[in-house]
Image (cartoon, rainbow, N blue to C red; front, side):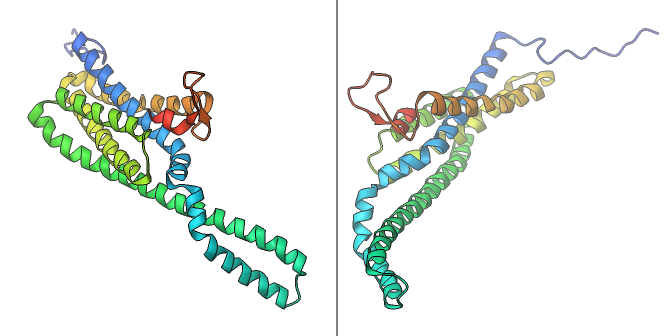
Length: 246
């Protein structure tokens, strides 16, 4: 008897230009989301340290730090463990170590706050854009979400202080959450049933290219830790992390 079972098409068969266009836009949106996140991870430390102002912070705690170091060294001298010459050298080293440790700790804490705000923004954006996706349509909502995370990523490079930097990262996180939720939903609603699972798999797996691209840019082109004149295009050098965000 002839086989009457229908032949299941391959996932890419029967897809129209519109299907491919939707897949390309959705994948690109999430891929550049991930690139943005990778650039943030690599740029967070130098950005926070610059925006906090190390010199101002060290000056604000210098008197208390010197008093603490002087008391510690004085105990050693009184106990006869150190000579005055050795104590003076140790005093200077202790003051510097304490100042550096205090600033590093403060920068690390603010780095955690900025990251937490971005993650909270991701959640808020997914919720808000998810609601408006039904009202405005997936395409318009995705366009708005891409605009949001793009513009606030760029504005992060113009930050003048730690608080506006936190605000930009929160709003950028809103765009990321909205773009991911809307792009995934758009693929699920647009793709035919036989292609849906593979398309969503590509949507997620190809996002790794964004992380790779972010690492390559930061490691081989523009270091977030060093000033750059953007290959001679700028009259004065600018912090690398600012150029990366812009």
